[in-house]
Length: 192
Image 1 (tube, rainbow, N blue to C red):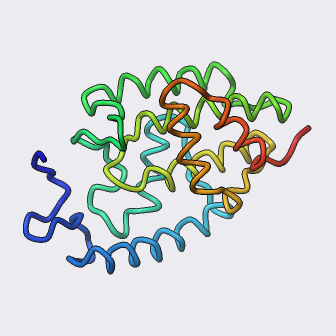
Image 2: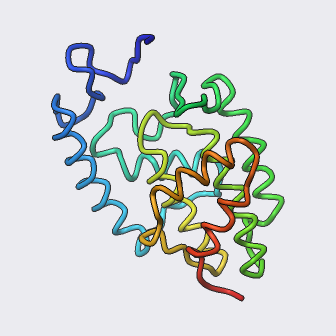
């Protein structure tokens, strides 16, 4: 395993603002802080243009109390069975993904089925980037929830089945968006 600058060398725990060195305590604190930050997003949206900088602002908003590197693009390779986007390619690949989203009017004005299909592609793209060392899922779900609200839809992330999400993400990583589209079809409510 290569050196990871995000980890405390003595404990192997992610460096954090709280000075925690126990992984269980850090996970609990991270969950508490991020839940509090996520709860306020519907009333106080994160301003931005639905681009990489906006996604980074979401990550900072959700995790800035815990991690000094919150909102910063990762500098190490990451993978879960298969590597995500290499750090050196994050900005270029994100530029393409978010330029496509902007050309598509940030999915606004779409009927529900078309919105779900577009959202599946966007979620797959963001997940493939995996731009942060930790907290990608929560940051991207918050980002996509706000995008959906702005487009006249709502995503019921509380109904997300973690196992289904993992399987759909693995399939999307391999190029099959259908499981992700089906999963999102059950979670998106709004315009018909």
